[in-house]
Length: 424
Ligand code: CA
Image (tube, rainbow, N blue to C red; front, side, top):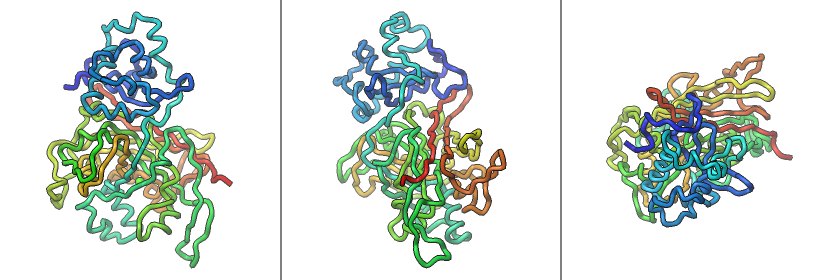
């Protein structure tokens, strides 16, 4: 067992039993503190400044040659240490904060520098994202979209069960929660009109997704084998892939998504390591027909992660509108990465690979307004006589994710996004 995952561990820091961040989590993120961006972890509602831990020598005996990784404004250099490095640092943080350890608890000066209240820091983008791929890996989502826009009887295209379908997205507009996003403007064409019009999009949507952050790099020509792919995955975040359905519908033929998808995607600030998610492995949906050998994997490579979406109109309470689960993914992350690199395309530390919208089998588990309101034909009813077909200006979308088993809960916190009117 990974030392830091021991479910019997308790921290001398106070942790609410319902917290997403018990001592078994030990996520990684970037905080802004005293005007500097620096790596951090979190236990309960306490943020742990890793640069301050390095200042006080807590990482001196981990065989990490260059301690500058603990002072960088993004996690890329830290992630480039590879799995032995992440695991050693995670174990070390766990050790220092576990009940019975006295290295830090009796040192008031060090504690004042290392431990920060969550509300005293601003969360920053955890990585510099070089490249971003968005997959389309939920069978229920792909089926729903196919039923709405193509043929209800042949909803999945012939390639879907053979290829983890995806496209290359835009990395410059991936931002961290709670960055607000402006409604995009662009071209749209209604079905009953001959010509397109220009203006603010009308069919603003979210997509409930998760994403993994690449933890390794490859050279051109290299191919990542499916059963070794997890060595290249550092961890996961929640991912709200905002979408303009009307812009998307007019532009996407024949080359796929473009400006209807590139105006903003928002991630949760704490990266939860694949190590921390180890207790929550499950098998995925049965894959029939059998996949080609380069996608044929062994072991349990899906993860049981509950996903909830809340919608909060301005000045109203937030309301649960979707409950889904990452385990519904037809194609797992290892297959996605094996497919991404099958042609010899290189990957880099910090790359973001998003799942695609994660819909479940029941209508209350659909991961977008497009599906929840079935293309606007079944408006969602919210408290206070409010209806929504798509997202309105000043609405806030909140996605939460957590894995639970026995008495252990490992969560992601949330990704929260308010939609602002289009800029003039
Ligand atoms: Ca997407």
